[in-house]
Image 1 (cartoon, rainbow, N blue to C red):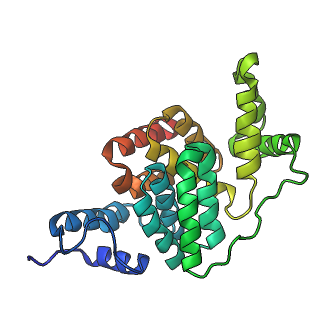
Image 2 (cartoon, helix red, strand yellow):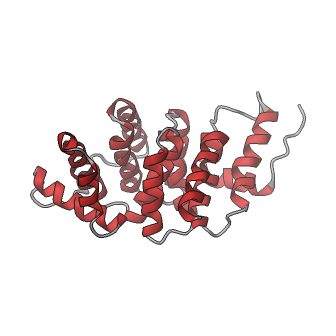
Image 3 (cartoon, rainbow, N blue to C red):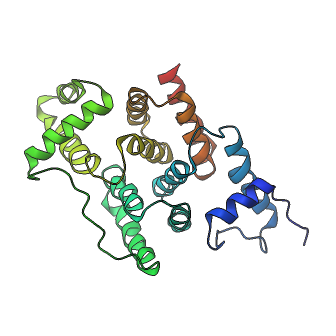
Length: 259
């Protein structure tokens, strides 16, 4: 078998990220595609944006992308990578918890069960500490908290404009967004708002079928002072997992918002 030609940077990245190499492509059975994928994923797509995004943020976005792409094998690998680069168990759990309102219970619950197994196999005691912050915790409390954090991400008055955008017979959906998605998830400790919006970009770009919602969250990132290069970096980072068509679509939304 011909010796595989992985670049020094790719080799260094792989060695640092993974405790063991059990990706679907292996050096023994698929050396050609392993060389192509490793060099593209762990060298070429990173080099253009060196210094734009921290390693922790990059790995967190890739983990979110594996959920968005519904790739449970890659998710398993990147939980390992997260732990190896110092991302805390509660941060990993918050990435997964935030996927529930975007991807739904039917997809995310399997990842939740797997994550619990991985944590236990790494001697991480469960359940983890409660990260809820909303006092009282009834529906109105979550609604008010959700409106506050939605305004923080999108500008003063944004929550009311969201409510007003729905017809009278569909105001309940605005309530679901604000009270459930934002009030129950975005208000949690464990990940700050800036990283939650980065992760949401990774979810939506990976799903690939909701450009209007992706545009809204790119706008939120812009409001939170994220640079265009940071948005580009997220897209480039997750490109090997989501493929060219989804990545180019996401990049088009970034260009539309930032100009």
